[in-house]
Image 1 (tube, rainbow, N blue to C red):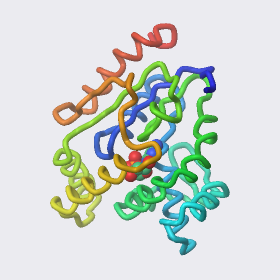
Image 2 (cartoon, rainbow, N blue to C red):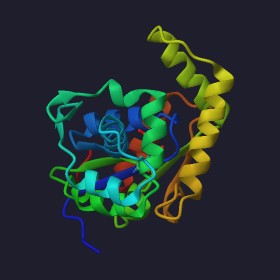
Image 3 (cartoon, rainbow, N blue to C red):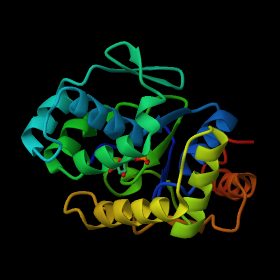
Image 4 (cartoon, rainbow, N blue to C red):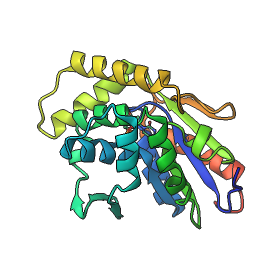
Length: 226
Ligand code: DC
């Protein structure tokens, strides 16, 4: 297992818990890099659909993952130079991501790339298996959860704010279906690392969650954070 040369905080949990927002806010606060690993699987699912490849074919998906022309420009995600930041955020892209992410060869193909993102001065890594598989030696691991109803309601409000059509019962059903697939897959299932700190964000604002996590960051990395 590779030792980490820079401080790493992992933030795992199901979608809709505020993980991504927390990871970005924490990284900005600390001046560290941020890895949104979900964007990798989402971009892969989008690329597969565009190329007309079968999402359920592990080998085809792994070979696409190995040659994925992915780039990042700040917070924007580029696929073959095209800005796909919005295209990968749809419910459809989330479902496609969950399907391609279930294949062990796909996860293996993306592992080293993710580990290489641990760069000075530090990394906040957001996903499902950041603490359990990708950075098992991270000194601080957070597992963020919230009830499916709260998560669906947050997503519903986000979609409505964007002027998009949404149905709350459909969102709850989709979230439960995606959780079920992410939790039950054989490789890197969505599960807290044994040494993760569990936080339930159902009744907390993002600012409250950030404060709580910053307390832990100060405890674990006293030299890096004032
Ligand atoms: O965090 P997200 O909603 O953008 O993730 C999209 C899908 O990608 C999610 O259903 C599961 C998968 N995923 C994963 O399997 N492992 C990760 N580290 C990140 C995401």
